[in-house]
Every structure is written in C-alpha cells, then in structure tokens.
Image (cartoon, helix red, strand yellow):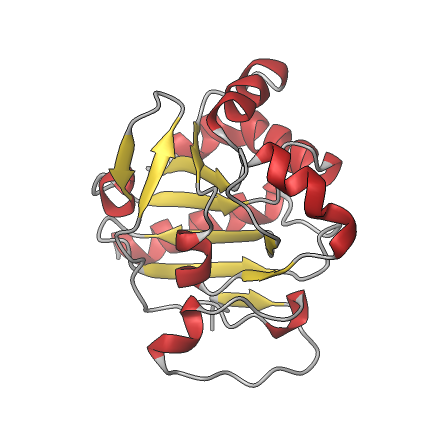
Amino acid sequence: MFIRSLFFIAAITFSFANSIHAQIAEKAEDVAPLLVGETFPNIEVIGTDEQTIGFLEVLGKKPTVLIFYRGGWCPYCSAHLQDLGEIELDIIELGYQVIAVSPDRIDKLKDIELMDDINYRLYSDASGELMQATGIAFKAPERYGERLLDWSGGKNDGFLPVPSVFIVNQEGLIEFEYINPNYKQRMSGALLLAVLRVLKAESDE
C-alpha cells in the first residue's frame, strides 16, 4: 500500500476541525497540516510579476509539486530549491509543474531566481495567510524576528512555515505530503521522483 503522507513527528494529535488549520502553532512539532484528500484554499499570493492571484489560479488546473520553504536566507532551503531545479525537467515529463511559496518579499524572490538559476515559479505569502490556512505555520524563535520582518517587507510578524512538499492534482486536492519539523531534513529529489512515478502509474490505470 502506497504511503501518501510522510509527517515526521513522534507524537501528534490531529484535529479535523477546519478552524485549526488557520492557527499559528506554538512550535514546529505542533502544526496541524491539511491532510491527503483535502483541497487547498483559494487564498491570494503574489508572483514575481508583482501580480496578486488566487492560489487555485496559480495551480491552473495542472498537477503540481508544491513546495513551502522558510526563505531565501535559509541555506537548507536554497539547497532544496536547487535540488528541485536539477530534476525539474523530469518532473515536467511526468506531467507536473513546480511551484514554491515562502514569506519572502518579491524582490527577494527575484534575487533567488537569478542566484540559484531557478526556472519554476516562486510566490510570496508574506502575511502567511496561505501557510496558516494550510496548517504549517508556527511561531518563529525570537532570533529570527528582525530577519523575517526584513525579508517579508515588514509583513511577517514572527512566523515560519514547516518546510513541506505537497503533490496536488489539477483540482488542488492533496495526493501526497511530506512535512518535517526538522528544517534540516528535506525530501530528496530521488524520493520525490519515485513518488511522482507511483502516482502517475496509479492515475494511468
């Protein structure tokens, strides 16, 4: 049986009430993410073209590999984004697009695109509304406060997303998720491709 959710928390209690997803957890281990089978909300984000757009429009009725990351200031996030870039063509060949979302302001996203030679689309959720609705936002340690305010253009008042990978279908429904409160541990490109191949094989049956 294919395991569709990799959520690396030793002990966690899930609440299925929709309201819990909109809260900011006290710490990374306490997040309550959307589950496989649920659909992403149509909350607005901003693209590097500086246009505001509803998130379901971002998905554009296409199967999507969706990444939430802490910010371009995080070396682990930068390495993960570069890793995705190296396998992007393989992902596209399997019929998926790649989208990444962070609290970073637009000019920071543009810098990341240039420095890391990223071709897939980056979006800003500086206020954290989408991340809160997804259930992956938590209160950042105080040492990050000034940096988060700077990188978000003053909109991030102290939250971080747990680094996450969601695979969603063309309707925005979650088919797989990888969520790890240890920000140093990321889903490898090899594992992601393996999961995508399984999902594609299932959809082709």
